[in-house]
Image (cartoon, rainbow, N blue to C red; front, side, top):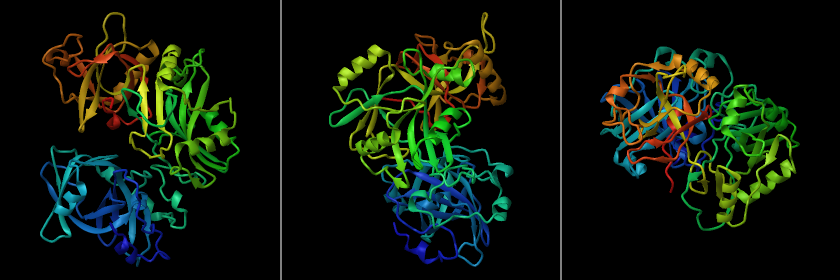
Length: 526
């Protein structure tokens, strides 16, 4: 993919759009930018082969199944354009106001998307802030002209208010046009990408980085690995630049107000410019992390010790460390944290026999171990297999899609109906009716009031029979259920998956405010 056409059309001494550089990362992102140039249109861009493949869509995206809109292919754009929002000066190519209308991830429904694109047909699924579902791009005889068609099923059209709201800043087109804050092409290469919905008063903080993820594994692999304790808490990234500090969840939500002491401890570190990756946990008396205890702290019921265990360092004093081997990043991290024993602690590497480590973790009642290749690079947002998780206790994040009425002495509700996504379909994994106390019953019930839905969100219901363990939801049972918009995510402990895809002996542990519902899939070991 070449950016020569993109660079040739722009005078970078006059426009603050980013200069074109091919990016080797493969994050499968997409962006749609509402562009008030000579004519209002929407620019659709897919991250492919180090650039953004781009089309101008005059009438915007189609929402009705089979509906087709013209999409005109334009020059490839640099990946750094994905968060461009602001004003292109009049007289420059594409002069006018640009809004980040939607952004997120996409998947192609074939193994060779570049070949499909070259052949003139691409089938893809979008998972954005506004758009969800399947679309097609089909090239016409004129090679620049394509048809953008909605597939599978209808989507509810975006409201006028949401159509004029940025997925990046929350501003309207008019508000964006009134400000002179546009892309600053003089920033260093490492700070060009700014995070979604990031306030402008962050004092030049390093950009948000989506955390690297670990794959679930059945057994320890061969090769050179180090192991760390698997904590049961909230994944958190800490950003510091001078006097500015932020503490963010893995999906870019603010944790600073919830954990102000941790935020202050990050500010107190001697390093002036850094990004830390770790886990915020609540410790039991025995020193184990407990997600339920963390939930109790969050609701004000308990005041356990809250610790930020840090296991990776992504940036230090302006230098991006993501392309350095893990063992080198860990050495830098030890020098930053020293022998800290306060609110921020270094998550040490365990390098002895992994089977002995698992036995010891079992005796201590730990959740499991995280394994990492010693030479692994930091791959933002990816679950590449360079990091794995070996679980001793079975837990799974699941989406709440409904509830049943309370019975006996219980108040508020009886059980939660929970599920996970598979190919953009929410599938029911059964019911959970244990693990609640009065406070969690009351608080969940209050949140359900604004999420009431008329239709069942689960695509695999009803079940034909209740099943051996009573986890099935039959037609008769469905008539007694109350449905919810599937936006809340919870943590569930269970004994096993049944053959018909339901959880056996599930126990509710708490809500996961740090994960989007659409990201929840059934974890299967590899």
